[in-house]
Length: 297
Image 1 (tube, one colour):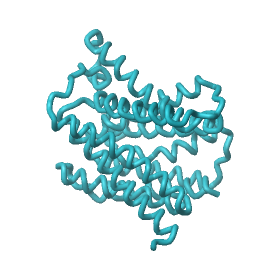
Image 2: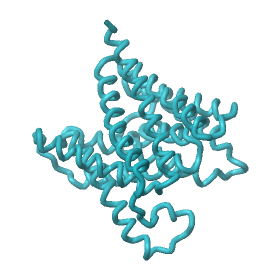
Image 3: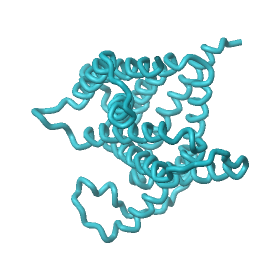
């Protein structure tokens, strides 16, 4: 029989593995679908699951501040589309690592929006974490690649979504908050699909206005269904992990999805990371752990 702490670590390890697998499935799907279509189908599955859960057990919290609920959904959608776009355009391990900058941005947003204090440890953690970003993107001169910039921006939007959740978690049922995310993450892609034939924008924004193409093969439908299932499994494992053991330990273990993602990416043909990449990953993980430990205290 495993001890409680052992269970929590195992749940988180499996959760990290499934999360990385989810990214790998998404990368495979980019051969047949646009990032926007992946976001659309992933979220529409989530809408069905959440509506079923709400019908089975109605929410009891009163709600209010509906504009923050919508804001959370918009931020969540923005983070997701940028994440899937970077998965399609840069190595999987890099995309997931850049998305992991979100705890660093949470500290900054919490300081400005929630009036939380930034102590010396947090400031050092932010410096370490963003130094890690520099090692990963390897800027030439004062510029970084467009794809890496969008990966970092995705981390920022994820942090904005988390910060918004903190302001509404006591007035909205968690399922309603998730529904705002997957609901808006379904409606906005549908809007972009509708506008696509009428928009002739710059190439850099073309990923936002793809022409919708209905999946035609059993393979693609199978991968879409599999992605929906493992997304739910990943969230279940994450919830079990945080319920079973110390939060600071789980926060550290959660970063194991980065080496898992590197492994899956390598199997899918990504170039294996160089020493600069590994240093960058290490710095971002260290910065995130320091920020997480400060938050737990």
